[in-house]
Amino acid sequence: MNRQARRKVIYDTDPGVDDAMALYFALAHPGIDILGITTTFGNVSVEQAATNALYLTSIANQQIPVTKGVKSPWVKPGEAPPDFIHGADGLGNLSTRAATTNVVDPRSSAQFIVDMAREQPGEITLVAVGPLGNLALALKLEPELPKLVREVIIMGGTISEPGNVSPVAEANIWNDPHAADLVFTAGWKLTMVGLDVTHSVVTHLELFKKIAEHQKHIATDTLHHAVAFYSNFYSGLHPHLAAKPGCFAHDLLAFIYLTN
Image (cartoon, rainbow, N blue to C red; front, side, top):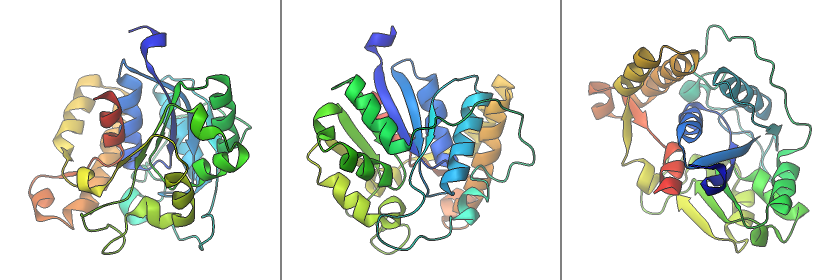
């Protein structure tokens, strides 16, 4: 598939194990063209999120712009990242990391989103899988942004499925509800991929083991390690995942929706 036919995407993310799963799916998919990775706080600090995005792209031999964005919620006090879910480093506490040379783009995440949307009006899809502060700030910088982007796909929220941080709240929306309000009411084409969907799809650890054994590559080894840590958390919550280790494929499903 030629580059013109691929869906142009800015990936707004807080990597995070399922964020890494989603990133590698997108990089491998012939129908997706990742123009940039805009990072935010959430699963980890924004500094760690940018570090992880640079690392994941570097070990996958990809040169993709990575930016740092908002480091705290729009209004509410911030909270400590959930290191018991993703590890202190967001990738299952890697024991070592290969040296990388990729560096952060000097623009803020919000400015990068605005710049790219102005350069390629009507062509870019924003896939946002963390708290929504970067998108909210981009809307403040460019009020016409909803007319400049093709589509927004969000992994977050829930309708009828119980929440994962409270009986009714999903983590990405909970982490920055005021930013989410700005984004959900902006008037652009928006699709929410919430817990009603993501809690129905399990990716099993055995799959990532097979991929790592087949590829014999640092990127797939890293992903297998991270998913093993992540799956261990879920096995403590869900008996069916204790019997056959796996995890919910939250962020990955935003890209599954995009490609289907």
